[in-house]
Image (cartoon, rainbow, N blue to C red):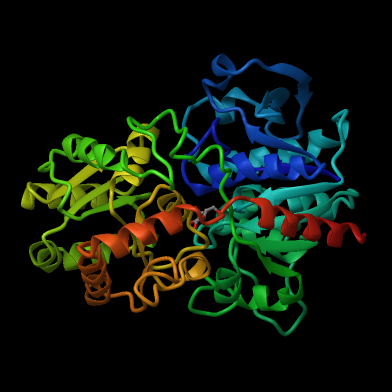
Length: 466
Ligand code: GLC
């Protein structure tokens, strides 16, 4: 099948969060199954100097704002990638900024340009709200493409107000559920969820959760209406992108069979974080967007008991909201011997956290899938997670002295529940033989795309009616 992935992020070209990892790796797995999968992204500033580009559509006149755009083509890891070039909207390095306008433009330009492309997909697979209007316009115009729409995070929908609605011709194209049902909220995402041939999200548990008022962010009734066309397919990792045996960004490589080098990474991480270098101290790591979703509130509330009681070290690395950036810096000031907050997102350092910490913490308030826990396991860190979304599907709780299950799990979104799970993990860490056996078992688990790519294949076959 011929499938076009439409996204705002794809590793290694543009990465803010997990969306980039998924769009950067799933097409490779699908191509290995024999499908012609390509990607289209906005051409953010700087990409033109990092990749060699060939223009496939030049100076295409668009109906919007008298703008025009180019479509350029490059190839990475065997996957053709189209880049939509327009300096006015995408002449900055930032992926997100004035999103409503910029991604309105992105979808509109693709809507007008795609029919002129010399390669035609059968399926347009749109990822997250930034691409949702493309589904709306293509469906409305009766273009023959089939549509799969994937929700990576329902919290971001592209909410807008009446004045934006009028300024942008969104009024007459708006469609609602049948009479008698409440009107849909003004969000880009609503229209794609309503009209796509199939809606997917990135884990089975999240697929169930988002059809409830608690997790539905205003779209739960629509998602229930579309229940028969909603699928949860858990994310995978590309095994070569995430392999501690060969990872060139790690100071010391190691494998599930021989983890002895891992302690040198731990020492390196302790050094970089400015913490005492000591293999015996349990080291807790977090690599995360600093966002409400990620559970930093309960980490903050629990810290003053957690650190003194457990004696553990904590390294948090990430970027995001100012209040959380400030908060993790404060942790470090308050507990210089035990806590470090690294406000940055740098790939080598992120990988050092996965390869150096003993315990990987993901206390998410909600989590569509989560990739951090998968990477952590592959790199030999034991997850402590909250029971939500994809964390439920990928980290069943330990049983029988860590011989079954994948991590320590807590349920309630409270600092006490978090502290309980971390305390349990720290206690287990001191039982070296059991811990080490569990680490090696987790490292061997298969989180590759193999299974999920086949699920997507089935989803595509379904929309194609084959
Ligand atoms: C978003 C979600 C995360 C998911 C990722 C890729 O970042 O928050 O849970 O793993 O998208 O699907």
